[in-house]
Every structure is written in C-alpha cells, then in structure tokens.
Length: 387
Image 1: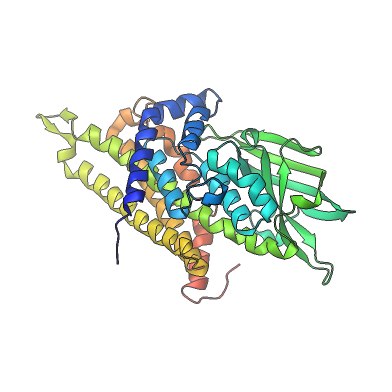
Image 2: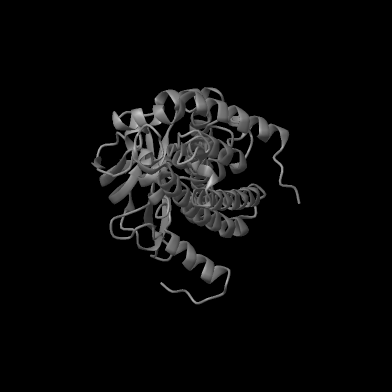
C-alpha cells in the first residue's frame, strides 16, 4: 500500500500551491466583498492547465483523473482561495460529458473545460425535492425534434459566470410511461430561462441563484448522451467527483485555517513571555483539528483512487465518507482557529472568520451529513432504509 503521490502529482501540487499563494486569501476576500469574481485566478489556472487535469489529452486536457483535480481543489483552498466552480464545472459537468456525452458533445465542450474558457454549472436541487432526483419537478417533454424544459432549481452556483447549465430533469419513458432522469446542456441566455440571485451569509465570489425554466426550447442534441438511457449513469458519474472535490476543498480550507492559527500562536506572547501555543489549552485543540484534517485527506485520496480505477460503487462509499470527514474537519479547524486567535480571529485581517459561513455550508451541501450517515447505515452497515 503506497501513500505517496507520483512525481507528476507532487509537481502539480507544488505548482498549484505556488499559484494559489501568489493570489492568496486577501485577493479572494476582496473580490467576494466587491461582488466580483476570481477571474484572474481562474484564467491563469486554465492557461497553466490546472483546470483540465482530469480531461482526456485528445480533448486538450492533462489526461489525469479526479485525484489530480482534487489536488488542484485542495491546494487552492489551502492558499485561501476555495473555488467552488472547480467542483461544478471541471468535476461534475466535464466528467459527465467526458464519460457519457456523445462524441460531438465531447469535441464541442471538453476543450473549453480544459483551458478554462468554458464554465458549465450544475442544476439538480429544487425547492420541494431538494436533490432527490426521484421527486424532481423539472420536466422535459418532446415537441417535435426539440425538447421543452419547465421547472425550478435552487442554490445553483455560478450561473452568472457560466455559458451553460447542466440541468437534471425528468422525461417520460415512451415504453413504460414512467419518468426517468435526463441531463440537458442549457445555454444561460436561453429564452425562458431566468434567474434570481439568493442573498447568502457566505463570503464567496461565487453567487447562488434560483432558476426558473419556462418552456425552455432546446435542440435534440442538448440531451447528454445518445439516448434517454444515458441519464441515470450520467447523473451518478458526476456525483462521486462532486463529493470528492468538495471534500478536497474542505481539507484545504482546514489546512489554511490551522496554518494561520499556528503561525499566530507560535509567536504571540502574553503573561510571562511564553507563546500562547505552549499552553495545552491552545495547542491541543489545534493539534486535534490537524489530526481530523489529515484523516479526511486520507479518505479523499482513497476515494479519488477508487474512482479513477473505475470502482464506482466503492468510490461512492468512500466519497461520501470523505465528504463527511472533510466537512466536519474543516468546520472544526476554522472554528478552532478563530477561538485560539481570540478577538483577532474575528477580524478580516487574520483571514479565518471569513471562512466560517463556507465551512458551515460544507456540512450541508452538496449532501448533508445526515444523508451521508443514512447512506453509510444502509449500504455499509446493512440497515433498513430510514427515509
């Protein structure tokens, strides 16, 4: 059993870390508070090939897998720049199209994913159904050769930055009459598609939206895959990378918070000239948080390795566990960092309280900790389904 990254993966980690530190958390926060996007960082990361590490080489990518993309997500977050669009565009949308799109769709979209010139966001969650695709209210119906989409989506990230939205809808199976999931690539400027920004208590350059689809007309080739049968496999193809890369972003955020706090506690001296980090009441909580983050990183590596090996069922279990562990560890790390910094921890200058909202959201989205526990209880422990 080898826990070492390959030399190429180590080089990628070092290069992305250097890029992230050139921008840093001050850049991230300044952009977020100004209502702007991290366009410069995204563009440079794309030019350097970091956004397309998981795209096949024949479409302009790096030929790696979710392991490499998780490295990019973690290292940018560890530099104080957790980019949510890395999850929804390269991890979810690009993976879905690479694995289940038609060849024409791969040629059309993947080169843009690879160089960062194309952003495609993901829309599954709905006001009534949440992310339960069995009860989605967004429906696609045939109108000649075209499709018409109607419904609502909520908490959709980055719509104002993207050219397309990958929408999960339900279609009627002509042979059975039953509704089944299907994915559609919808231009963000399509007639009938409107959006409303959600006000969130999170410091982030990426905005959240409600989407309204009112008979949005799409051509036949907007359907991902050759037929409706591709819908369910395509949907699940994107969910494991989503969980793994969200976990990686959480682990990176936890590392960032612990590093900031450790630098402070190792130099701050009060009451007799000893650093506050020499006191166990300060050092032990930080050490505990560091242990939790490192454990989460191990599960992320396992999940990504399983996914890249094509072991999807095992990757589903490990990906959910990684997301759970990283969500808890990131929230613990940021909260601990704020606590040990005292009043300084609540200032913008020290750059940890600005992450409180994001890490709290990481225990909820894209799947809540409670639903992950339901999943583990059912699929690992053999318990009856509870919902």
